[in-house]
Amino acid sequence: DQQVKQNSPSLSVQEGRISILNCDYTNSMFDYFLWYKKYPAEGPTFLISISSIKDKNEDGRFTVFLNKSAKHLSLHIVPSQPGDSAVYFCAAKRLNGNQFYFGTGTSLTVIP
Amino acid sequence: GAGVSQSPRYKVAKRGQDVALRCDPISGHVSLFWYQQALGQGPEFLTYFQNEAQLDKSGLPSDRFFAERPEGSVSTLKIQRTQQEDSAVYLCASSLVSSGGNTQYFGPGTRLTVL
Image (tube, rainbow over all chains, first blue to last red; front, side, top):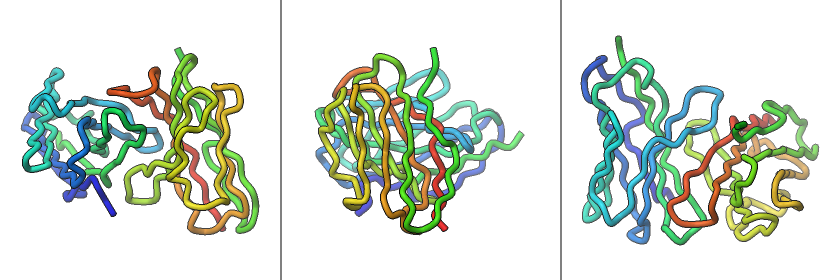
């Protein structure tokens, strides 16, 4: 039973444009959300996080939006750069829990 | 400082063999996690340690899987009598604190192929 879903397996975006990656979750107990970036043959690297008390968190070119009522979050990358090409994983957990639940990932390709 | 390291990076085992996968977390990190990532999937939680204590092993798929962290630093994931469905990348992650909004730092993973 997949509690975190990324329904788009891949996304292609032109360099300089905005990349929007989406993630949905089913467990209303989740209150902490993260995005990870993964290059081939490497482990996932933490990118940005958001707790359920916020609806937006920004870090440079990366912004995560959280819509709790829709159980949906998104990652915006502006402007997109070729080095952003990677697989992006959404993850969720309960703040006082141990388990992280990951989506299946979205492969982003930024075209120069 | 050094990140999380895992060894071996690649392991090929014949069905029925036992394997041991090692994880060296970042020095001083309290929490250590093991994940299994099948092809085309996201990482799936296996087990969690806080120092040497294994606080959650609910994700271990069978009793053939065993993990330990005897001195609260290096951890080993052992799989006995490997099966083809065990083929996956096994990821280790560590974090500084034990709960809350802690950031996990992942190792590069061990790719296990069971023939």
